[in-house]
Image (cartoon, rainbow, N blue to C red; front, side, top):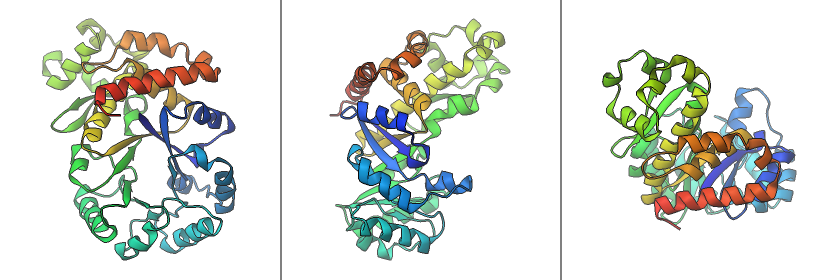
Length: 319
């Protein structure tokens, strides 16, 4: 099953229908979006979050408490407001909060989130994760927020991680590929156009061939400027699907963070055409053209989601 995270900050009535239509095929995790809201100076009101959850919490595997990035006391106040309202969220241990209170927090839902996965170094984050595990014991589920630090993740004691970096092809123009010894590797497409083909990283050249791209395709600037970002989006997503499979085999749940319908459908298309050898790029192009039709018909969306989820589950050889 594909795992996805959506933030309350990004939620809309339209996307809520998507979540309803994909139950049983996508395992949804709800984040509050506090970090994003904080960076945009648009704070989320805990009362509104609580009211929304009372109506929709059943659609999610779990939901994360509304934290206040870097503010231990306000995070505690938000959590108390949520539990007083009868909710059982995943509490968030913010970056400067001591782990000695984690055991008590874990009793709320049997789950905990640890912040800092995006900005903190793995040299600091991993020992903190180990300390958290020691405090709460083996039966508490620990989620690393934004913690996608390659295969080093497997050596920590985390149960699940979420990442948004799988969108790096679309967002940053990265060509990405997966290496079983290191994780996802990136090379900027513009730099690739300026580099002799034989001097490109071997993994990158192999992945290009798996995409069905010829040398002429690769070096043609005009062709790449007309849909290059779409190609980059799909192959980067494929690389992260492979990364997800590697973590799943190590019993670490990989969760794709999406910000809306575009990200969601991009992931579906890539998942449907992903194989152990590469991604069927030409078929992805065809499916992408049907975006509006599929997203406008919930019965069709349910079927596409089912096929995509079954395909990657088969590749990961898990149930």
